[in-house]
Structures are given as structure tokens and as C-alpha cells.
Image 1 (cartoon, rainbow over the protein chains, first blue to last red):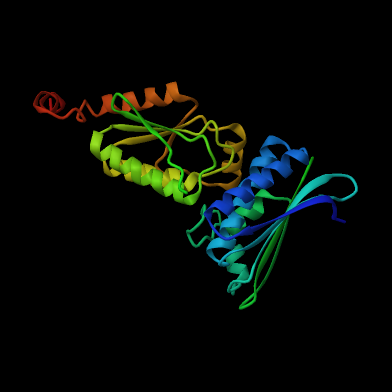
Image 2: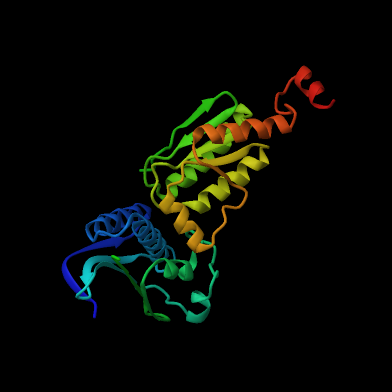
Length: 137
Length: 134
């Protein structure tokens, strides 16, 4: 089971500069969790895309980054929450290679492939929350 | 505030070294500055050094390369870190028209041979153009 192991930070995502700040925050956590250089890059790339999604599609929101543990390993969990329009077709949004063309163009499927755990919670008219975890090996 | 990335000119090549985490706005500003500069100088190539960058900003390169192409200039991305390369491959993303090279020196040499293949067409002016059509 994944549980928080102490440290956590919250950042509002309201503009372009916030996306960069999220990226830097995630990088700091990834280093602390002793993720390998490759895993750090994967997590930073994925969260950068998700933060941009929150800004572009969700109209802004909040990013939460925290250290987690499952008893054996440490990891970094990042979640992105907005109160935007939500995603009407989750299957399509998660389809491989599908992207609306904004952001890095990785799409949700790209972000998903770069992390270990991926959770998408969305409701039309309510908003979207995407949570990802990357574990140390 | 939008941070500006400096564009250096070496011969007829423009060199862009990205040292910071670019915001979208800065990336767009760079694309515009670069288009202006290529158009103004008639540069035949663009080298983008990403050795200081540890996250993936690939979409920008594809756009820059497409813009450069319209001005008949080649683009080479140099100095990609191994972790960035692995992330890129894992994603199955292609960089489009962008060529890559291990380091600046090899990047410059790719641009040089591309220019030679085109037979010096880039060198405007009467003598250069004549030689190019032999």
C-alpha cells in the first residue's frame, strides 16, 4: 500500500511559469527519493505534461507533490487537480498516441507510460485529477 | 517575464544554447527570434545545444526545424543527455525533421557537409550562384 511518508508540497498552477515551478519541485523530490537519473527524467517529463494539461484544459488547478513509501521502496507521488470541464471520453484520452496536439503532444498515454502508477479521475463538468507515482528501484 | 535565450552567430551558423527550464512563452519567443535571425542573416544552419537540459522539450525542436526549413536552413540538436534519449525512445516520439549529433563539433560538421552537398548555393552574390549551377 502506498502511504505518504512525510514531506509534501502544494503549488497552484495558474500560468506558464507555474508549470516550470512544478517541474523543478518534482525534480527536487525525485532526487531526494533517490530515483535514477533516467527515472527522474521520466517523472519530470510526465509531470511537466500533466501540469500543462491542468493549465491548458483544466483552466488551472493545484499540483501536490509528496514522498511516499510502500514499506519497501520510496517514491514520489504527484497529483494534478483542476475544476475544469473534465474528460468526456476517457478511453479516447488514454488511447495510445492520442493527443489533442497541445502541450508536449505526449498525451495522457505518454505520461502514463513514463510512470509506475497512474490514476485518472474525471467527471464532466466537475474537473479532473490525475495522480502518478514513480518508485525507486 | 519572458526569458530570452541568446542566439549566437558563428560563420553562417546560428548557435542556441538552452541553459534553463524554458516556459512556453520563452520557447515561443525563441522560435520568433530565431526566424527573424535566420531571415536577417541568411544562416544556412541552426545548432541547438541541449546538454544543460534534463527534461524533454521535443515539440519545440520540431517547430524550429520546420521554420528553419522554410528558410532553407538545417537544424541539428546536440548534446542530448542519455536519460533524455531513453525517455524519448520509451515514448516512441520522433523529432520530425530534426537531426541530432553527439556534440557541438559533430553538429557543426553535419551542417558543413549538408552545405557542401548543396554546392554552396547559400552563398548569395553572382560568383557563388554561378559556381553552384555547374
